[in-house]
Structures are given as C-alpha cells and as structure tokens.
Length: 234
Image (cartoon, rainbow, N blue to C red):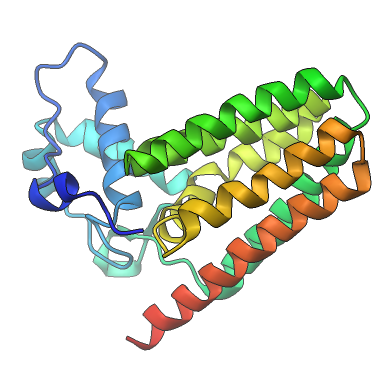
C-alpha cells in the first residue's frame, strides 16, 4: 500500500524543541520514525551537526540518541564515515523471521491451551485496530498496533522470556514490517492471516494456531526477501 497523500505532501519535520516530554525521548522517537519511514535511507550518513539543527537539540542529546538507536540495530558506525543508518542484509532478515516464526508459533499454540475465548477476544480487538489503521492509511499506527497484537499474544501465553527476545528485536522487526505492510494487498492479506491465528486459538487448536502463525511469518519473510534483493540490485 502506498503512503498516504498527507504523508507524501508534507515534508517530515524532525524538530522537537519546545515540547513537554523530555527532549531526549522526543528526539529518539523522531529519529526512529524517520528511519522506519525511510526519511533517512539505509547507508545514509547521520551527521551530528545536521541532526542538531533538524531536531533542535544539543549535540549531547544527538549522541545519546544515536547510541540508543545503535543498540536497537537501526544505526551502525562505519569506520571513518561515522554513524550511518544500518543496512539489513537478506541473510539478517531471514534470521529475524526464523526467530519470529519459532517464537510466535510457540506462543500461539500456548494461547490455544489457555483461556481461549478471553485471549481470542483480546486479539480480535487488537486486530480490528490494525484494520482500522490500514483503512486510515496510518502506517505508524499499523506498526504500533501490530506490536500490541503480539505483546498480547505472548503475555496471554505466559511466555515473558520469549517476548523479551522478540521485544529486543522490535526496532529491526518494525524496520522490515514498515516495508512489507506497504506492499499491494498486504492490508487485506496480513490481517486475514492473523485472523486465522485468532480463530485457531478460539477453537483450542494449538497445532493450527502455531501453523497459522508460522505461515504468516513465512509470507512476510518472502515479501521482505524479494524487496531487499530488489533494493540490493537497484
């Protein structure tokens, strides 16, 4: 799905000066969104002086933000070039999807063995918010609501350690997800695949829930693989 007309028409403003939350938190959020939305493209240099001007914050804050983004895997330091937007190779992406498939399948199966109706109701509510965000073409909300869907899945399954692993990869996962959710038909296919997970949980069919979760990840993995291969040859 293409970005909204509003997003295309209005230039992204990074400035956070004068807002009430801590400048560091706001600058971090702005920079993370700018990377996920490809305002800063993979491999692009992140010059501290320029970021200070764009964000309206001190160099100290910019350095703290870049260090944090490096810990999330969104920024890397490349020799004499300094900080750059991290590149995700197809091999790295496939590893991330392998981890997701294994852990999400496990969590979905566990949910089908718990309080099935209550869990399914919570997941259905999260899924409807994802559909609503797609209808409004609010891709940032699609990302946040999708993360909430999976938080509910893992917490309902009682798999807090597994969620910790997935949560540590959230920024990288959202980097890939921000590409795949915009592809034609994904606004319908993605939620439909997630609905199969919820339906299997509601029926108490753990094997079907695990299989649906893994198939959903496999579909996203195939889309990301093709997109990364295409960008590598562009």
